[in-house]
Image 1 (cartoon, rainbow, N blue to C red):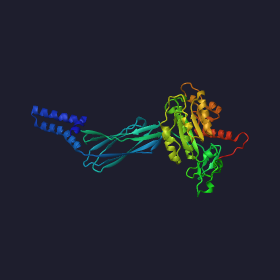
Image 2: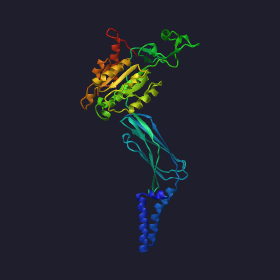
Image 3: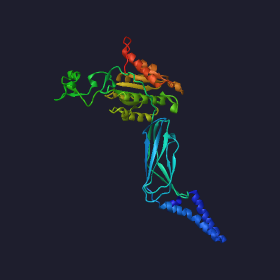
Image 4: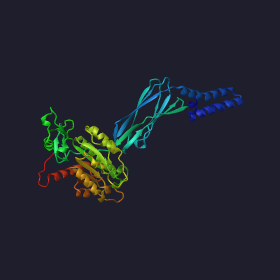
Amino acid sequence: MREALAGLTVRGRAFLAAGITAGVCAVVMGQQQLTRVGVLVAVLPLLAAALIGRSRYRLSLVRTVNPQLITAGNPATVTLSMTNEGRTPSGVLMLEDHVPYVLGTRPRFVLEGIGHGWRRDVTYQIRSDVRGQYEIGPMTVRVSDPFGLVELGRSFRTTVPITIIPRTVPLPQVPIGGAWTGSGDNRPRAFASGSAEDVTVREYRRGDDLRRVHWLSSARTGELMVRREEQPWQSRATLFLDNRARSHRGQGVASSLEAAVSATASLAVHLAQRGFMVRLVTATGDDPSTSWHVRDAEMNTGPLLESLAVVHAVDQSWLETGWLADPHNGGLLVAVTGAVGELDAPVFRRMLHHSVPALAIALDVEAWGGRPGAGPATPLLTSQGWRAVTLGPRDRLPQVWQDLALSNAQAARGPGDAVGSVR
């Protein structure tokens, strides 16, 4: 009751003050009828407080977001499932869900007729043009009587994290490796080389199928070695994203960094759909959540896109190279860079020695405006042996990707080779 009286609204306090005033005036003036009116007006908010204070409501909330991974610029639906397990009615509910400003305005709902076993589902939409991780909630509930004289506030503690992933565009199916082979479902898989080190083998055991004998390893070790069935060859691809602040220009969603993140996300989805095991590396090093793993395309891209959703510009001038010491490093390397300088040349040269082929999409960051910088990185990368193309603000990523693959295929064929088509 004490809490209910503390929850009197302005209207309830006005009624109580008017009733007391009327009662005092009735005693002073000797008006008995006015006394009845004053008592009625003063008792009404007290009765409402007693009703709200004696209400025993147990509200449960289930909040779901569909889809769970939201692409920047696309809407998502939030469903609130409310249930009252209390024994007595709780009046009128006013709900307000706390939503970050970038996701839209805070939704408000008014629900009536709440009794025992009551259940209601309400929905609202959220949308953001800015990638990142946010939290929805907690939910604030205000219980009020039908006259609006008393209002009590409650708040749920639970929140739901959501991830706004970068925009992606479909890329054309073009050859990106020098050697191709088929898998069980006829998907192309690229290999850096055909050496014995690329195959996981073990010693021959009695009963092993002789068709699994790896003769190159057997000749080298002097003992029969067989391929492991549970660990077949895998196509690996490393995506390198230069997210240094000094390498990019512009602000917000119109910056070159956002264009680089979107391009990296499109490449991650494309390579995963083609059967590659993909990992993400930034200027600060390898991300443990995107390390090598064997999953299908949909499960493989999820961790990559979540990591790209929270990538931000870092204030460092160097590129971390610890990931190059990974014994499993190799395969395809695709770099998305901004402006680079001569001090970065040794790092990119070292990357080239650990991966074949090495492709790069260099953003023309000066086209995004801002302070003067080193300009496009394409000449520096090509001088180090990379196959690189330039991406500007008005360029279409699918066309740039096709040009990059074409230049790589021409370099792999050589000037005297015939031009062929690869699907």
